[in-house]
Amino acid sequence: MNIRIGSTTARTMARRSLSVAVERRKAIAILVTAAFLAVARPGCAAAAPAASGAIDAVGAENEYADVIAQIGGRFVRVTAIETDPNTDPHDFEVSPKVAAEIAGALLVVKNGLGYDSWADKMIAAAPKADRKVIDVQHLLALPDSTPNPHLWYDPRTMPAVAKAVAEALSLLNPAEALYFQSNLRKFDASLKAWSAAIAAFKTKYAGTPVAVTEPVADDMLQAAGCDILTPFSLQAAIMNGNDPSPQDVTLQNGLLTGRRVRVFVYNQQVTDTLTQSFLSLARKNGVPVVGVYETMPIPGYDYQSWMLAEVTALRNAVADRISTETLQPKH
Ligand SMILES: [Zn+2]
Image 1 (cartoon, rainbow, N blue to C red):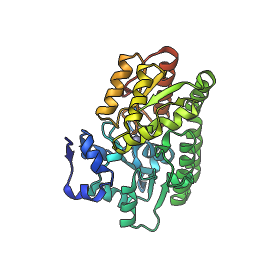
Image 2 (image 1 turned 45 degrees about the vertical axis):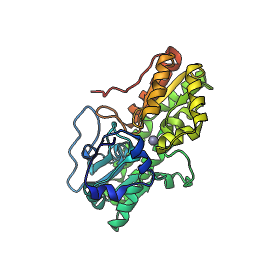
Image 3 (image 1 turned 30 degrees about the horizontal axis):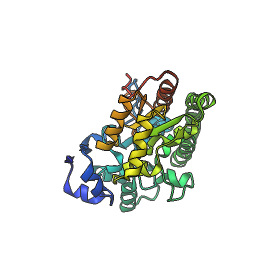
Image 4 (image 1 turned 135 degrees about the horizontal axis):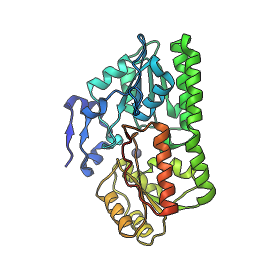
């Protein structure tokens, strides 16, 4: 049974066509109220207060909000809409509060590829002449047919997003353009630890066979040279809450029972009895598990440290057979 908290109106507004199937199959508490936590700069230190006249900005997902905050610093006031690592973002349900946040924003960054189509409706419903909208799918010129919507796991994505954010903020506040450019350079430099970890993994472990549940981290696994043996049809079924084919399930079970993969990458946010049965099989057969997330785990992580933690967990699984099923919040 599904537990939902939120107004009927909000539910009706955002119901995706797939969510009927999702509701039937998944037992995930959608704590909508938990999703409206504003983030300034996630991290251990308290964020600097926004300057007066700061630009109101929204990241549809908290990883994009984090990048806006890093580029905009004290000249932005950022709200993240999807922030709860205990819920399934594919099931996200909006509320009037989200509509108000978007209506008031001068900068919105959203993923696209249907992942956050609720945001499109709200942007269209509250037009604002000066508002800049960065749709990451369009920024990267990806067709609607792109099968995997989790663009933030691709190492090429966030440098492009950060650059677009700096450009948008410079148009909205030209007096601080140099400040935004300086933050952009810092952001790009701070991504190097992650890209170096990916490159080091690829050099040593290219071709590593892996199994996954849902495709959230596939772009990163591919950048690291992993060979994903789980059929995409199974991954897509799990992502969309559809029933997978029995052949796919048998194949996946065989990957784990036959230890034909060296790591099992488990999406902690898109789970059901089937994914849990795969997890049990991995544990039972001694296949190291790496837990991955759709939403940036907070407190303590920023986008860069989160991504680095995922590659480190992958390396520990393959090199040392150590499981990291969950990323612990850092303090
Ligand atoms: Zn997903």
